[in-house]
Image (tube, rainbow, N blue to C red; front, side, top):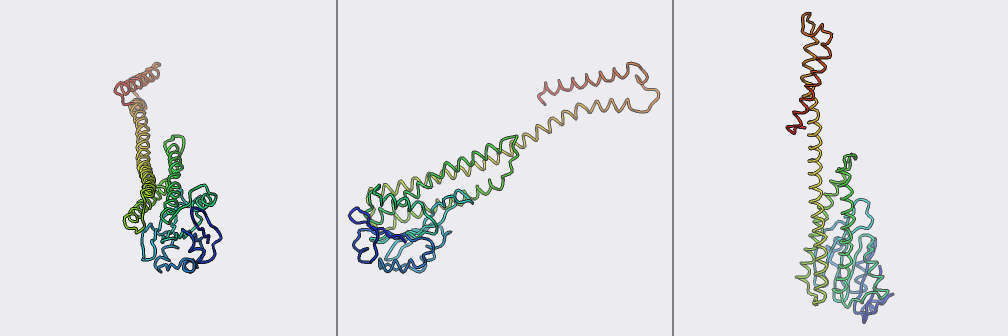
Length: 319
């Protein structure tokens, strides 16, 4: 656990007792994965009692975004990106945020570089210290939304790479499973972003905390950023659908062109095979069979027929 206090715009570290916590204007309790005794520590330092149903919500990595509250606190369960996840660029996990009058509590279900960066900037004095839990929440949400915004470029680059390989005639594309997996991941990510937006909207409508005009603008910016991410994800889903359709259209066109060439070749050789078959019959009395010029006449006739048929196909744009 890391405990950060804020008093008169300054960051206060090394808080140990409940009395020291009470003297601060705002206290941020940040609990790391594996700290199972965090409800007791919260009770000792702040006097808050965490409802038993919320205990499970806070430790479930797959929990969808929710908003809930009790008489003592308000709870937001949100999704944050898993940095460097091997399975997917859009892999997320839950992060729980409890808000009380002078306390904000974050429960991590994994490493959260976003919180670490925010804490470092606050400690170094690079940002104005928050004066309340709602202000601190707005900073956390801003950093989370910026992470989601930064995800747009790598997703677009990945799809562009697959698109160039998929439409390259010299490259036999074999990553259909990964492409379909990406489509499924984007759909799940879209649902998470929609849930994130619904939670923030519900919280802003129902919260008992006073939200100043300045903070209202900041929360609106967060929602606008998430909307942009959501729109980009939907656009990528449509691009994947269009890419698959284009691929099969191109494949069908290539097949048609191949079949067209084979058909033209077959049509040209059909009369030639007929002539060869006729003069290959075992009859004694057959025109040109015993002539010294018969072979060259038949060969010339075949060549003339071949060029006439080619000219006919070209003139009618069949080939």
